[in-house]
Image 1 (cartoon, rainbow, N blue to C red):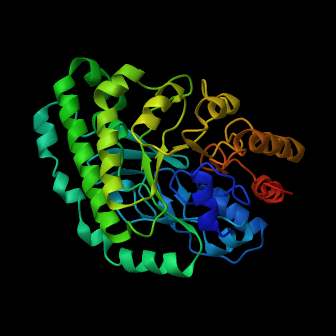
Image 2: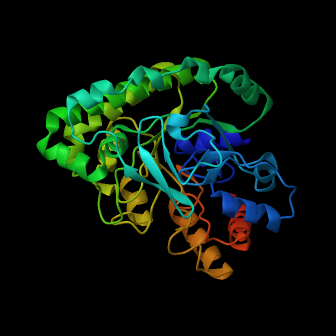
Image 3: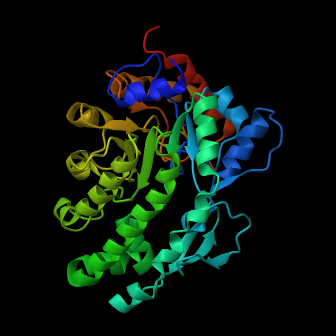
Length: 377
């Protein structure tokens, strides 16, 4: 099987020849610039100009030599768009993004220090020029480049996250604490903000899918609904405010492409998975295995027939930075024993590979997986 066939097979809950391998296919399945440059030096690869994927999280796009070395199966398709951080380099310590959100650098990351909707009024929503973020020029040349990749390579092509989800967008524009209060006490404002974020996301997807719809195999969404110990909101509140918005976006995507739907939603989202399945989400990422109720055996047993798991190979918080090679190998073996049978699994750690993870461990993780990934040895 080639890479594209391998992932399509796995996402149809069948066993391919090998467990598929993603590295850099999305903004949520990649590596920080420091860790990436350390890895390249460790491997004695030539110096390259690092292409940033998301400067807010200090993550990068992966070069072809790394993709070939580790036999990666995925490749991202994306627009260079500052509303999703684009490829800006050398950002100042404090800067204001396209929405008026103020960010401040904290070591390798940026944190929100000020959100533009300070009062929670509908006038603030109207003041945002939503059409500004729907720029068809961003997709210039995208059809030609994607069609060329479709015809000339064997990668699984992923339309990478083009816009923030309605929950995460509300939190960023209003401030997390304020938006969560709005969902209880300022509901009309919250619903109007969610509606505008949803419509803008659909328009962004329309721009992209009009160009690449026939050529992609996965369409990636992101809306971080989970924390370490629970979801941010209850399942009932999710159903009241966000489920229909997510479904509206997914239903639109399905009018433009046959691609599978990938949702990145960090943390503990166990209680929301039945809703994700119901609205047509095919793939859950990450599998944050040490968040509450995100045990991989439990997830595979309860939901493995209905949703695919993308990630979760080893935890980047508690395991990969601290484990020795033998312990890393044991975790990878166990993960594959649990998640790979019957298909429905794509290999990657629980989240982006962080700066504190040494290159020898990254290389060992990827190499040991290459040795173990065959379904039938």
